[in-house]
Image (cartoon, rainbow, N blue to C red; front, side, top):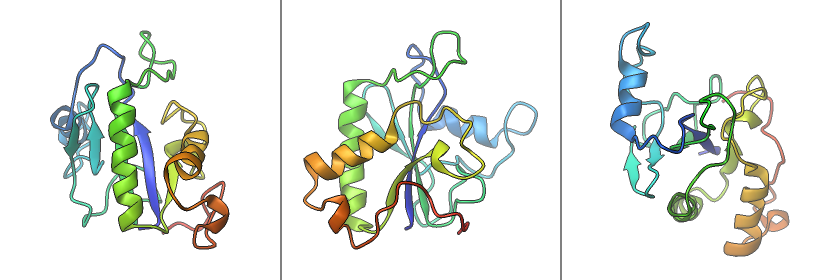
Length: 166
């Protein structure tokens, strides 16, 4: 894996959805859905912190156009204000706890994978997704929870994604 990418479902704090609803959004025929073969994410974290599996990691996701190969997609439910448009960090503490545990496990399996936010990829910068400061969050994981520090991280630490699509 090259990347572990963080996303928001672009739902309000009052919407308690999970992988089944997102799967319908992604697989229903157009114009209601996107017409994809499966949910685009590998993991979805519900408002109560429940971790749900989407696509198997062995299958390429559909969550960052042009950068899906070697990329695990993780979606937190929430991410927009009550107006359903404005990005908002409205994620719950149970979601943060689950995200940290999931990223820790994925980091152990894929130590060279870089944690990214959807808007960190070229061509996706204008998106609000994942609706929080993923760079500060990533750095805190390395500095506060994990034994490896960015400067020691297999000589592979970048602030932004490389510009060569996978």
